[in-house]
Length: 235
Image (cartoon, rainbow, N blue to C red; front, side, top):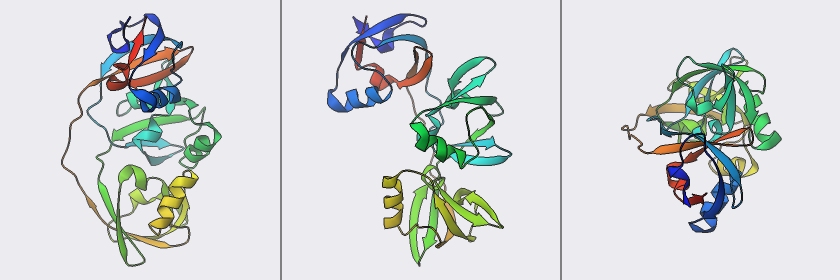
């Protein structure tokens, strides 16, 4: 047996053992990997130095997508299906798969991102902290989290990321699951309330090092972090 992180590209293997306890097994099961799963390693590549949210152009408008959400999208580019996060600035692709079921498909549709539609990768974004004010209370959240709050501006629905400093707008919708909406409600973020972008705080850059394994189960491509790949024994 050998570790998944040590497998050469284009080699098909079967998962024999997973170390690390229930949490690790749970993460891998979400990717469709458990003991007995057969997969083919496509490549082992460095982690992209950018780790924050991304900016896309879809349906004629720009949208911010949190990294966790972006990881659920696969696109077709030049005849190949690959993770959205492997695109670079200026690359275009057609949305092929959105993982997570209808709920996530509906969430992405709010941003103009739908299966069969073309998107353009614009850039990686620094994970700035947005300082917001609602009901005379200041709250802070990153660009990715903020991207899930839509507001009305000049008759259009936009993400609060696109407000200018000191600009106010009425919250029109929170896109996400029940737990996210409950969390936002506790912060005072509910539909109909007026919210102000006070300012954006820019963090110091923190480079991320390491690598990931790109693997295929059947026709489904997936990205496995190097740390997780070192918990998986295959042969």
